[in-house]
Image (tube, rainbow, N blue to C red):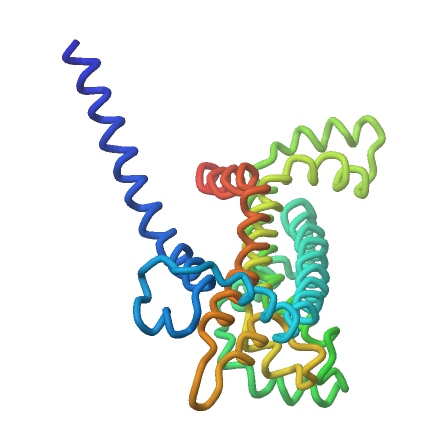
Length: 278
């Protein structure tokens, strides 16, 4: 009985701690949500209280008058293209670096590591000049290329570590059966890397979707702005429409939360697998 009681107390303490941590992380989301349903005057009076009357009109104003329907599509296009190309290039690069004897392989790995460590702020000015000289300023293609360039090193580094943990014997057996490099990559490597690819996809999706600086600096047309930049439309020099601003933040946050919930299992497996194999 003492053993059962101690075990129950142990589980109770663990889940109580996890519940407390979850509440700490979810409290800002809850605060934004309840304030997105208030009038601005209510927000000024009581930031933490529940709304007296639910103002769903804030979402309608943000979506229509705030042009979030347009920013939403821009964000989807830029994020889908960026993350898609990052995954394609990263998996191909990781397969080559981990399974092929390339000339200058160590140098390539060092360059990838340097690419991870370079701060974004340091490269903004030369990058702006480069993009303008290439004729890609105010182009969504230019922004996509920038995201790919900045995130491919990180993605390749993660996937390479995972592929190196896959037994070489699997590929040797497939090679004996007549599989070529393309078949090895598509039929052996990719299915086994599903969890790590999902983790990389979520990391990059969050980075691209929430990124504020690149669309702000490299896109000048209002019709090409993304959701994070669109939030500025509710902030004036003297006043801020906090109700619409919080509604816009919820619209910005919801897709990332949905994608994470759908890929949560693979995400956790990808992160923990890399930690165990390392």
